[in-house]
Image 1: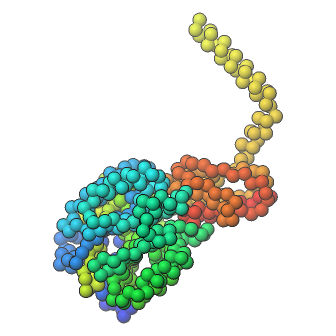
Image 2 (image 1 turned 30 degrees about the vertical axis):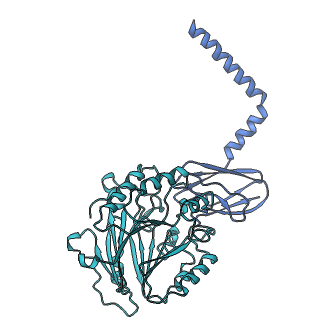
Amino acid sequence: MGNIIKENLNSDGIDRRGFLKCMAWAGTGTLCVMQGGVLKSFAFGHGSNLDKAAMQGDFAFAQISDSHIGFNKAANPDVTATLREAIAKLNALPQSPEFVLHTGDLTQLSKADEFDTLDQSLKSVHTGRIYYVPGEHDVLNDNGAQFRERYGKDAQGDGWYSFDHKGVHFVGLVNVMNLKAGGLGSLGNDQLQWLKNDVRHLKHSTPIVVFAHIPLWSVYPQWGWGTDDSEQALSYLKKFGSVSVLNGHIHQVMQKVEGHVTFHTAMSTAFPQPAPGQAASPGPMKVPDDKLRSVLGITDINFVRGKHTLAVVDSPLSGG
Amino acid sequence: MKSYIRNVFLCAGLLGAVASAAMIHGVSIARAAEEKTAPSIAIDNFSFTPKELTVAAGTTITWVNRDDVPHTVVSTDKKFKSKALDTDDQFSFTFTDTGTYNYFCSVHPIMVGKIIVK
């Protein structure tokens, strides 16, 4: 119960102490329940204390991220095995996710056989559909041509798109292309313009879920963990009462609430990365073999219609 | 007997090596000198080391990726561009013209470096 936000909220919905408590590093999976822009957070390890009723929703979807198929270094010599464990965990959920979001870095080097291995593994997921956005590892050497050929035939521009599911508007963005020297992730003018038009005619009460690879908030710019023009993208979403932003890239769980916007990053299915500034670089982090599975995982998300409630559970591959 | 034959071949081989070394004497010296000073830039911990390097025109610089993640070496004004370099992969470029060359990693653009050619 230690991570539950108990503070009184300011009118802007930001609860600083609660926000700080809610930031969870790798290995400490967190359940977050959002109600009308207010985030409640529970340490996932305290499973017996979870209010199961709070997790009931109209539908559930899941997020997996950063599978890095093809990576074979010390931080995890068998990333296909841990992806399969994540899939087994997904398939064991009490409620099958209606769809799955993969938030990028499917592969390590954008190689065809890496994509093939990922596709083969994900065939066993019990879900209706899998939606993808590319990570920077998926668009090496070909500006994402292969990625779009496989996963983005119906997408716009470099691969962005939106869809509606049971009253919720989902937006998949691409922020790993055409990056500028010295900069961070980038959406670019074409995509921003598209986003503006995409959400223009939606009712303010429509819940919005945005997903992209690199965080759309400034996690740690010194390591490139942010997106240069994310503020402009978020300005188009200000009118909405409930906005949830799901990202990957940093291989650890972090959350933040800003007004009606909840930001959330997911664990990797492949290897952990260090907390911001806690290592010389953001490269793959070697942890003891018996600890690896506690810092990898999936995110299971329930949506409750009418209450604008999004419940997010980060589930490590072991424990929890 | 076998051992004797092998020694003969070995000697012949050595002689050959000496002879060919003599024949390309001038070139060998030049190449050795170049190798001694041929600058290389390490890509390590998501940074280029050294970050800034000054060389004479005509110098070939080699980048070597020492990280567990792929990086690229891309000139900001499109003068040169490597493919994605996996661990231990290298990229070389010969700088024939004087000037300042800014470059970055297009995968992790926070990584920047500079070559000054005099």
